Image 1 (cartoon, rainbow over the protein chains, first blue to last red):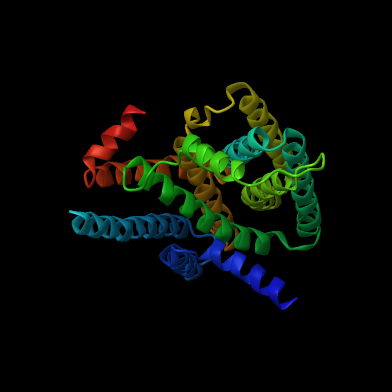
Image 2: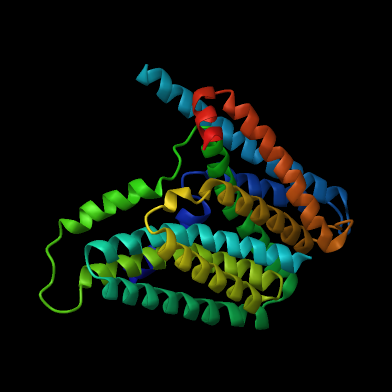
Length: 75
Length: 250
């Protein structure tokens, strides 16, 4: 039972966080930012879009940096 | 309009996952036993279908729609961004392309080395096919459940997934080992864009965001995210120009 619960928790952890925790954090920040706006706001949608784009751009920048480091090491 | 995008998103997502599953089934069928591989495939599809019905139907019936849309929107955003990120990295050459032919060859070599069974059924072929289809299919189940439940069109989403399984199965039989010809990364990018757009729309709806064109805003979001994706691919291609050119040539 414990093993099954652990496997279930691991599945969701891998699914929601995995090796890109910055994406999950970014989405939470985006939703938190939208929450600050009053209901019926159109600007909140634009903010959501903006934070999502910045999140994926940051995640790609992290990967590009890793790639550059690997390439440098490999000569 | 959102029904069309829903069907397209589920169909493409299911197709991509089924191409990956098909590689494993073809390898198990070719090296071990077609009958057992197909039985494993059928069993996995049945279990996945039961999973959609058991989890999806109560969600549609009993959970308030605004809560559902917020939670599902957030899930779609995370899931979609993971797909989109990977597709951008592959398109710009920072990550190796998924090569189904290479995976097929490796799987054939691995399965060929395992001794055969004396009885009519091959347990290895059944298990490998079942595991491959079930694991790849889990992502399809999540896409069907999230998009189907948030749109209140679970049956439509399930039919779109079933159609994709059928089409990819037929294509698999026709093209056999040429699965690398399937433009998998472009499909993944399209799915990622749709999932992120749906995710933004539903999570926004769940929190009371006003979308100017109602459901049509989903198309606007796809276009806007598509534009941002193009810019990111272009910028990242500069980091690795050689590989980017190779990708364009494909």
